[in-house]
Length: 321
Image (cartoon, rainbow, N blue to C red; front, side, top):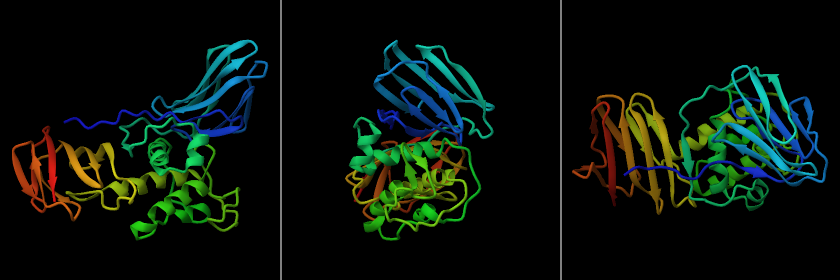
């Protein structure tokens, strides 16, 4: 009954001048066919244009950025990645380039929670932005939001005002799309000022660390699908209307363990709990659900607690209306 997400998050763009966040840092990389810009550092790529099949790929699985294409001299491929002290640029193929820049902010590696909303389209970000389909956007936003160094909570001004979501489910998706369109430029680069003047927020210039947007967005997205209050676990508490099916995996639940779960037709279908403690947990389930089965053996009513034993895995299914 393993619940997993096969899709891998590697958004890309063929547009010269596209920017993206270097995973686990607060640094921005902008890629051109013959030049890379990392924050204030310009690094020429010693190739001759025209560059065919120019690509910037943000590989969130490997915490790396790859820039590649075919120039007059031949194929080239560059990798950019970060560690605790520096950002490194490595030439995998083509002209030899190896540089390091000091890195003052780094997010250590940890178990990453994952979200899938059923989209399996190619992650060409120019097309993703044009389609404006949240099922493509939100999994990448959720994943990247866990891969940036944590910052102090900022005043919710500028585009950060869009982090306040509506109470009614009917208006939720429009609010999430407005946050994406105004609060993020290029390939999920956070911004507190919408320099495209799309009319979602005021035109007042706001100071602060825009990476607060990524950090907070990930927390908000998590709360739509899962919440915890002590030993009470709530599944799909504020599910957006059009997200008929999806999965979340590797959910870290302090004091309980690790969860994976999936839903279809807007109703919870399966849950896997890897218990890290002994004791009872309760569930806050959708109103349609009246009972569920545990380990294919016994049936619990929705309000009944489940007794967990440490280092034991529990499989919950047959969530009945």
